[in-house]
Image 1 (cartoon, rainbow, N blue to C red):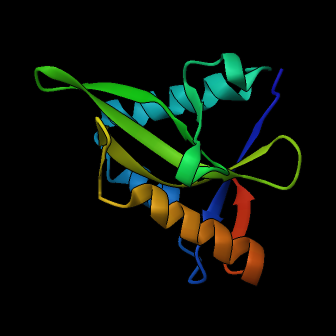
Image 2: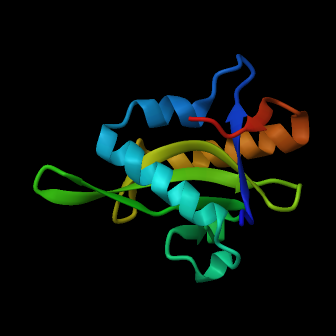
Length: 133
């Protein structure tokens, strides 16, 4: 049974930002992202999930999905990032990044999502649609 519904943020030009990031990834990363989304959708208690990460401190209000994918000789870490919807049970995906320690590639990925969240809720910039890859 699905407990959570993922939605996608589209910028004012209609571009689906998470889909753009997703399609730029290699197949191993795309498969890991899809698996993480499917896993979180059916997880009743997100706090008990190892995949779902509620961000804190300066990124409060955001979440990321912990995704690992074997690339070359090592596993690399990726983070689809989004924010909570005001509608109960909806999680809005915005973008993604690669994560190495405290560094994100691209730099400022979380801050970018915070800016998008603020503009969406305060100014109505962008639109939200059902998630689709």
